[in-house]
Image (cartoon, rainbow, N blue to C red; front, side, top):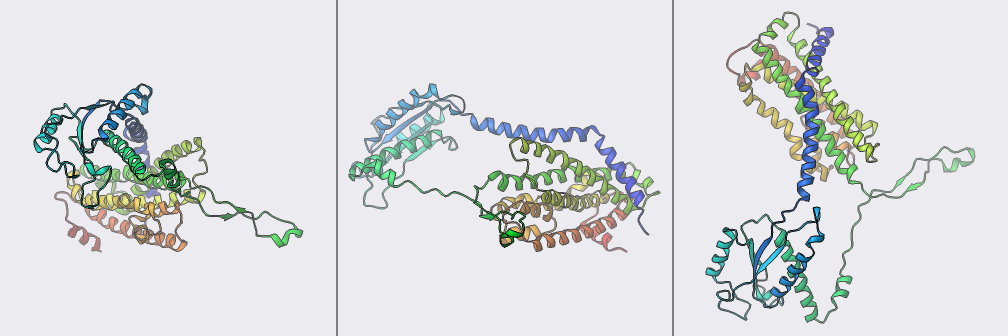
Length: 464
């Protein structure tokens, strides 16, 4: 029986209108960008805040020369604290004297000194009680390494908060600077000259050299036709090469995850209230399902327009008004429609096969895993869009709408045959999923009771 396009349109417009007029939809539209913006601002705010609680520490110095240097550097650090405010604020450093008793073990003078275990335990207990933040043991071999390659050369930093690296990094910088200076003096080398000669060579990341399109010429310039001016390579813009591809992928992901699961809830609610049985008196199951899919596609387009429109406004404000080409926008619309039909039909099939929302949890798991695939591999695609993994995943139909769109925004852009193959495979898969979902929808819409197994769903699909 031929589907009635008018009935599909009526169902689609009803689904679309009822969805966009709800308070939850309007709140969701406003809430998602607010939450994302607030999370970004919170991360920036937290990143600039530093715990200014004083750091108290003890230095067990087996070299006999580094402890005074550390103490002097800590005093200089504390004197500069009033000038360091806001995001430059730093905690004060309090170096407590290390008692001489118990810190030298047998082997003194050989580079094999070892902190007495009882003394180390006492310092550890002070840290546990909150009297100290850390203690560090410096072996005698750090200033002038011995000939024995097995000799200990690393400082031992002990703390009950291993993720707090403020004091650890400061000690590492001060000790290494002093040790480096002493080694240069011992070798009779001018440290300033050595540091100047050992300055690293930076690598500047540039784009490729291009030739501008040739301007139209008269008859006298026919010999130069087609040869435009050579354009020098510019610096790589991380906003265009990394931020935009990632933003496109996650924008599509958020749109799909915001709109498609609503189909599952809608179908289950209509089954529970018996509304679907009444509707099937006027439309066929296929017309009802396609109407819901088309309506959901409209909702997805509204969300995409709002989110990307807001993003383009922010980009234009920062001088990136041309960041999305017309071709990329067309690809976004096309792949978004395919993704909505693909995942929307999956959620409709799951909803029609279940009588309650809790029954749909187990059937939703494969759909959720498929939709999460692009999120699992997007960083690998960003680093190398032409790798076998990137090419293979962008040709895998459930991930193609997300990853192929991302690759189109990256350099090097995928060849035309890969884009065409991804479109064909995704379109065929979408048609197959919509067909299978229609069979499941037709059978499961009027069924009540226990949720079917995957084997039963397969039988529904194969039933003529």
